[in-house]
Length: 307
Image 1 (tube, rainbow, N blue to C red):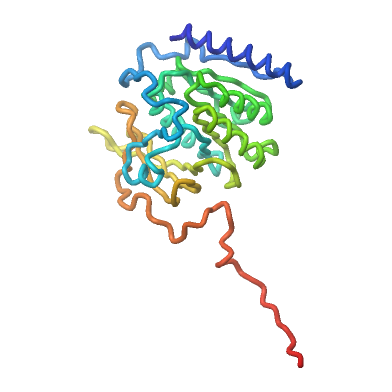
Image 2: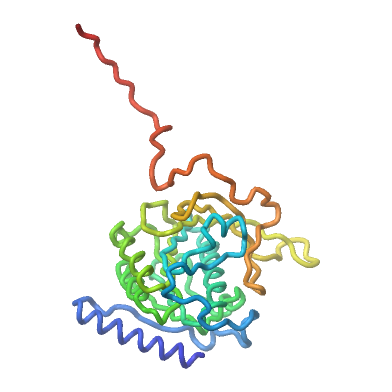
């Protein structure tokens, strides 16, 4: 597996350099896989993935999250040929957002054995750290299947992101950037969504400390940490990861909020203990990308009566 990942990395690097030469762009990315020392000693604690159970070019293919209320709201699950955005509104929530993204990739990798491309911007790495093999393995994702690309600027990250979404040899591409860079405008977002739809590669855009902005993502999630429930005989401090998820944007239906718990052993999401009101129906189906003009204050105009 490691040899195949290194071959994929070398092939991707050559392709990136060639495309850069043709388009007159700088060949800037430093591609590297996780080092052998960072890999866990044993195999990941989850079942061996089946080979291509979901076709990357099948437009209706989705990734079910395993929570009925949430999957129903998403139209069966996350579309695999689409762009999805995950954001942490504050820097302190970056680890929670990264954990949720890793859980999605782990669940996806159980049904697709192609490599996963991860792009980390330098500024984002300073705040949130770089991918760490043993930690990723404990989360249920085999680090040997990852291709990690380090970039210096957001513009470089987005270029590698788009090129990765063109590559049908990948199952998904995760791009982690800081804030809302100027290069990530609405046009760039639409281009990324188009590449994902054309090639059937899931795109995950992980934004650190970024506000809700207009974009072409099929879904947008705001992630915040929540205290973990206790497991076994431990009274506190030991438990599975739990996140508070705000589904802020959903092209397939209404938005909502839910708290999910992740079991890395079975690669399953479950509703967090105590979250009885999972995915409440919002008062209005209006997208949060647009202001609610009906409730916004309006100026009162006085007209002088004539005639």
